[in-house]
Length: 255
Image 1 (cartoon, rainbow, N blue to C red):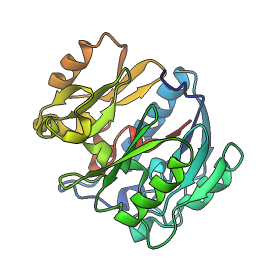
Image 2 (cartoon, rainbow, N blue to C red):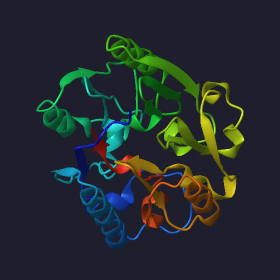
Image 3 (cartoon, helix red, strand yellow):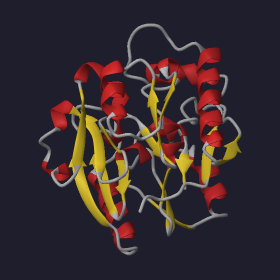
């Protein structure tokens, strides 16, 4: 059974949001348009009966609106991460203070690093990406924590993208949306798959939420494939968010 989402922690992009970390080249993001795209995302979640919990912008932390990286939340526990990028450590403090009102709190400790973007939960199975942001210590710590709550964890090497969920996301019903170059990955052999052409790689970061698929606009091949699922589909502009290596899952902590 798919988990019903009641709450989402979000944080508005601050005035320095366009100065954050990115691997993208070309024009810098337009701050006003970035803020507008974030606001539209929040409106979409609210329209799906999700109560938004707004955190204040965090001056000095331009990437702080990518809140998903700061915590992994299950129905039983919230695990506060230790972000892999040194510049982002500290963003998690306000998130931890908020989540303690809802969950038992655990935390990733040094020398572990872990970004929430590297964690995909499918029922009781947790896939943990081993990426440039999540190291083996962090993956092992999260595994030990979640195993106590009867989750099964699988570590997935991530060599060709920023985070695990840059390349694969759950669509519910034991179905995954993933980059075509990962089609034969053994970690996902037991799932139905919809493949994304590498030319539309950003569309991999599609969000399954309360019976709806929310995908970035501008990816017609992927949209056509998602329409075959029969699930209601919403599209959102993410051009400025993408310029900062972000996607739709990155912008909230959902529980």
